[in-house]
Length: 125
Image (cartoon, rainbow, N blue to C red; front, side, top):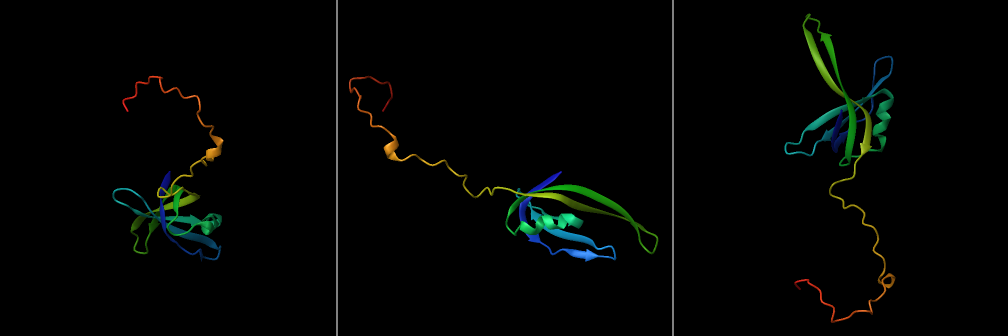
């Protein structure tokens, strides 16, 4: 699955536990009628993928949805979901204009000198 939008926030990499589990979060705001602020977490070696991305940058993130079960100390079972990113790509901003091919200089066009004013054309102007 994929999420597209503009980066609202890029968090710092955090390390947890004795095993050195690493996690880094990014928030992407979707660009639709009702924009959503989606928190995506990158874990372990994938945290480094966010190093070259900045707030305001349009991106596409490939994600997996993860779910887990947890039993609290009172014996109640709880369920949690998370969105985990595994790839992030920069997108061309819709506001920027696409590059136009260069226009050849006027010298590249030969003047038309074989015009015959008596030729009839059917254009209305």
